Length: 175
Image (tube, rainbow, N blue to C red):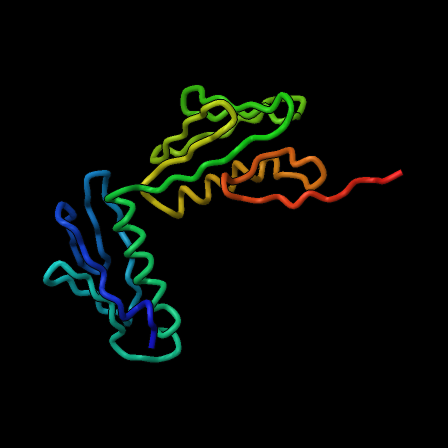
């Protein structure tokens, strides 16, 4: 039995829930849909969403908690949204948003231009890049793609890192 899957999800006021093969959640920030695989039953009653397998077997045991977490993440997204913050460290490294592109100057001979997906918002303040959206997976994937352009290196700490990420610095050559 799944400890996470058994927990019901409390739906606050102002969120609309529709169930028909998949579950659609609509809130003040937008709407998200989560596909429900075969073998699962999702019910909405008394302000609670409950996920239960129709028949317990190996496959449903593995997916039960995951499906519940995906629905919960979608609910949080349509209410509050998600944000990832990245820090650029390095002499002369900078970022700008121009139109629907993020332009990074990170030590290469040319600026790196990244197309911003339509459902995400990106802002830059000094050396901090903020990625915001309602879909947790899209926000995380885009932030990881930005970080991949120049990951932090362990000797000087230069590069792009997450706000709460700690880089263990290595000792360089000693005389």
